[in-house]
Length: 449
Image 1 (cartoon, rainbow, N blue to C red):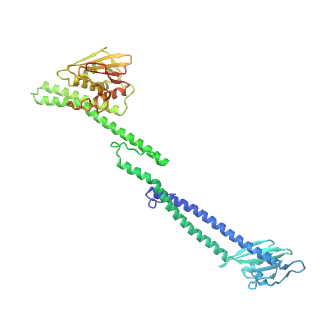
Image 2: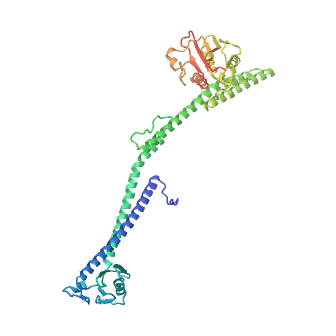
Image 3: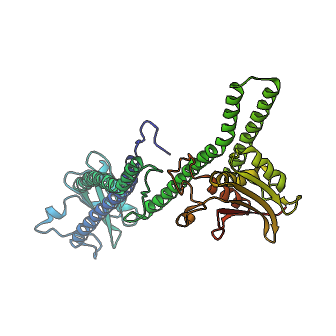
């Protein structure tokens, strides 16, 4: 049974304190009830023992050896005879001065004396009285009585004292529970403040597990893993955005250039059709780029993403790029029917950054050659430019790194890393041949068809 929503605390420390207080209250209530029941039983047994002791003292004054029962009178008989009844069978021999056989006390004493065995009974009323009987030879019975008011007063005192002690204990329990919960939740508050101040991308700080309880250490480890995944996802999103921007720049530039060319000269029907064709091809290229990169970002490329004729695909890729006037480009293949084990769109996306990089740095010539080796299809992209500085060769495929950031080129250093990542996603790779001179040579390895 849970507390009503309006009465339940709204904080964790309040709920934990309420649970502890409720549990302590139930336990203390059970212990208090049991203690007071035992205390009342003990006081009643004490009263019975006192009554039997008095009855035994009175028995020493009763002579049952002769034919008639005789009671010896002593110096302190008034004390012994107080609240004492002596019966010989059903015949009353002696009773307290102020008692009669017809009042409830005398009637109870007669019943106890004549029932044939020892026993005790309690009479009700504003002042309860306890009576006990002692059997003697010759069917003689001695009944003693005592007022239970002092015993009940002691029991009530114990009850009130235990209730007061219970109240103090519950108050201490609540205060200590609140203190312990506040102390235990202090690291949680610190972790909350840290999580509010930190940023998943702008900082590498983590919660860690040192100096934390086991449960909070596990929570900190889980939160650290979540922060790492979030940071990785954000970096992946930034990388995808940069790659899309990098790859869409070329077809978008073709569209803009074609429109500018079309607007600055007489527009014949043939010119318009040619412009529409170029724009359509560039738009289709942009669609292919987006589709390829997004599928790769979702990591849903199939195990066998298709096949592509290498030579036609390379020629189509070259045609979509803006070849500088001073550069000639040759596309050759060991086998005109050579096929790579990937789709044509993905092959274009892998080779395009390498071609764009070679055309940008070539002095006069770029060559593309496709060949088949034992480990798959290889595509060599070679230029006669200055080559890659040896000091930069190790950072060639690091995203965002450029050999000469001040060379006037507006690239972002993402083309070569993108080409390698796409190739590796289908079991291939992209390598730079450091031994090739002059110029630069990049080799694309792809799975065979």
